[in-house]
Amino acid sequence: MFKRMFVGLLASLFFSSIVLAQTSFTGKSNGAFYNIAVPVAWNGSLVIWNHGYSFNPMLENPPDLGPLAGLQLAEGYAVASSSYSQSQWAVFKTTQDLQHLVNVFKEQVGTPASIIVTGASLGGIVTADALENANLGNVVGAFSFCGALAGSRVWDGALDIRLTYDAICEGVPGAAIPGGPTGLPSQFYPFSEEDLGFALQACTGIFVPPFLRTSDQQARLDQLLDSTQLPENFIARDLGFAVFGIADLIFDRGKLNTRQGMGNTGVVYDDSSVNADIERVAVNQGAAQRLSDNYKPVGDVGNVKIVSMHTDKDGLVIVENEKEYQDVVSAANLTVAIVVEDIPSHCIFNPAEVTAGWESLRGWLAGLPQPNAAQIQGTCQIIEGAGLAAGPCRIDPGFVIPDMDARIKPR
Amino acid sequence: MRLPLRYRWFSVVAGAIILLIALWPRTAKDPPPGNSATPNAGVGSAVTVTVEAVHNGPEPQREIDTPAQAGEKHSTLLNEQAMNAWYGGDLRKAMTLFEQAIAAAPDDPVPHTNYGRLLTVMVIFDRAVPLLERARDLQPENAQAWLDLATAYQRAQLFSKSWEAQAQAAKLVGAASITRDAQGRFVVTGTTLSE
View 1 (cartoon, each protein chain N blue to C red):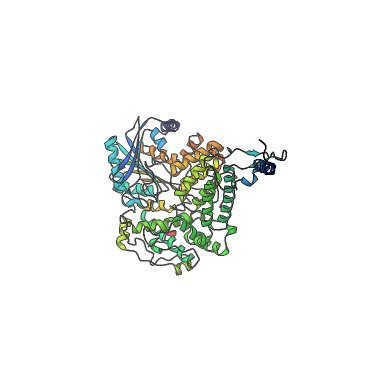
View 2: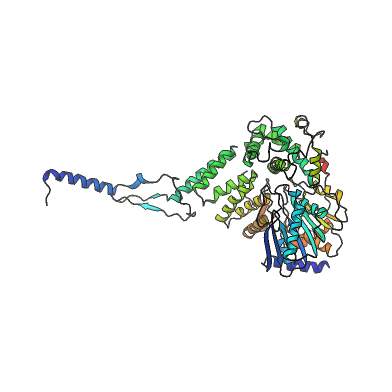
């Protein structure tokens, strides 16, 4: 069966580079833009693509169909995506957004025989939430890469970064970021991305080469890196989430509505000076529950077959997210494959790796045994060797995913 | 008609003045560099104007910048100042100077690229992406321009676009020539980007 699928993949990858006839539907429904593409030879299945985190409302119109859309359309799948009706941590409404998307699909195209939900980064938790709560129809499979599958717990990590910055950079001229545990003092507080860059530069000198930093800047940067366990090329990005993302999450009326959903009372930080100096904030239990509800996976995925991939040094959505997801989803439903990279990235997979993950899921759905990481690596090497998609293939079947508690202290 | 003698000296002087004005070299009228720029003048499309002074016999030819050339020189200077400000840690000043450099030479890919890279590391993707797209449009055969864009798209979580940009770069230099630097940015092997 695999040989037959591989021949099909060969043909599909060939044809995916050619513009095939398809029908497209775009528009807006219930506050979100949608994009639907249906190939002429539709196989009856629908792939839903869930995009990643966007600081800007509405992202693109029409929303992107995902990096595998060309291949998926060539394989006969219809592909659909939603812009989501919320920006940033959009998970408060994404189940409704996807329901509206599927309803539009049914009206315009017909009821799909089966649905495969896919997504990356924030799109990973949107996917996980959809499997457990959206009742989209006959959902048979899911494919996530670099997914924030630990769900709302990632915001504890963001709070730690936010307050660790304050503890380390307090008193440094030009380094202050107002707002502390609420990210900023209000949702639309006049503090821009530029201002954040200026502050971070003043404290750490991170935007200039190391030899141009002052010794104090370098010392503060080193402490920030040690305390947060983040790669240097992620500090600015993570702090952006910790400032603007937390402010949006807490102040948006459709989210936590000014309530503090994350706290750090009682947390013992590894860095003793940070532990002594960091601001302590109590969590509002109601807000914490609302955040958990939107969303922390519980593993109620029924018979859905899931393949999930991650890069091992991801500094934004850390690889430990996969362990959290493994802890709640049955091993019979979930295959995880970890790509070991030289330089930390968020979601930089080679095309052959992601294609292998997708094809492995397809094989599983078609009746092959559940794939493991070694088999996905093997599939990747076949795809790369045949010149169908660029490698190299870096999946390490022996990779042991660390526990989230070592990176984000439990609370 | 002959002028009275008392007016003849006047006509000789007046004629000499007119001749002097007509033949006076135009050096004093040269525009200062960077005072104006031709927005649509493409890089390399500027025309060199030569002026030959005739009042005193032939002189060596000297070049005068077109507005576009003057703009490019001004932009180059501003770009260098912006880079110095960046490396000096004055990001606010660097951003202002990059914007001035781009205004002086809207078709120069260099300040677009450098400013786009600065905004990318500062995580200001919604402003970095249009700059890097413009830089790419100005030099579509430059693989690094595609890769700068691929990095910005990737960090803005526009994964499909990042893949497409990487593929375009691979067409130009081969996939094997594409790597990532210590900051995680896509680069053509051997390329060193500004911090």
